[in-house]
Length: 419
Image (cartoon, rainbow, N blue to C red):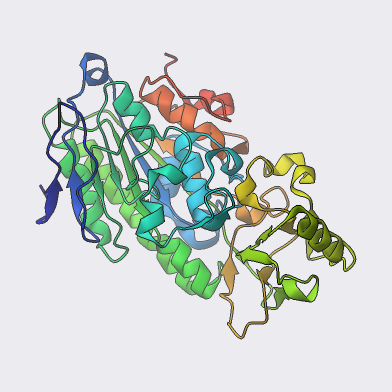
């Protein structure tokens, strides 16, 4: 194995166990899952790559010859893929692997409060981000393992949690500074395993373009450098996958885009008395129904074109953002690239951000391409919602999808073979 430090969990009564405790960042966990069954052994392989914050038009804006070549040799959405609202990292990564919108899988922002649990989820805290009780749906790796197929994950948000009774057979505890090339080395190590142990689904994650976009803005030289860096990695990955002789499909996408934001804060407590309201990012949680209605009416009495306010049941249907109490009530929706804060703040906002309505801001649209032996070359797909990716990956691996909000839809046109 590539990693010098690997944690192996002992099997108990033939079942996969929970991950061992006290694991370190960057450490790989190897769980004793079952070998691939006969059906899985007949399937091809999928490497699903997320380039966090890689806006759909970055190849044209900054130049990405390897990604452009992969797109030309396969299928792509030239006008982008629509992230689910809100266009944030954890909600959309979980949507991509479950086919459920945030209001249904429960990860409604990167951080949020659950009024029933009376607890706060934070994507930065391992206590919550690795706790599967926060997550709804059946992620692709759990789906694969339920149907006799092995899976592995390198840093995909949520992959450290046990969800639907499973974790990936192999996964790595998040360490953002782990060298980029080492991640590809590990993918190839997994594909070099004996056929019975070899994962047919591998997810891989890079945050380079997201970090640069936040810190410098999407039109910056630094974002261009980050784009060029991950573009070289994608060229390297395709070349090394081809060298294995295995039939491997690459699906390269992003969770959201990026936009330069207005640097002036929207200060929520200048519109309403929030003394009895818990505020988490843009989400409001008053302590009673009477307080909820009062806060809503106070916001309504001070309209601002930069954002809209709704009772949760009245949030516009196209946002698909009303079915979970974790969303709070009332609901504030930014109408453009604006940033909000509960109270006065001296913090200087990053020049780049996301989280906005992709139907309103095309800059939120994400990259999507697929390339490999099962993908028709030269296919241009229309703009489609990212909930459809789940059924697409399931079809590539001949898995029966769990219940979800998407469909194969236009992505069916990208497939060489219909199963």
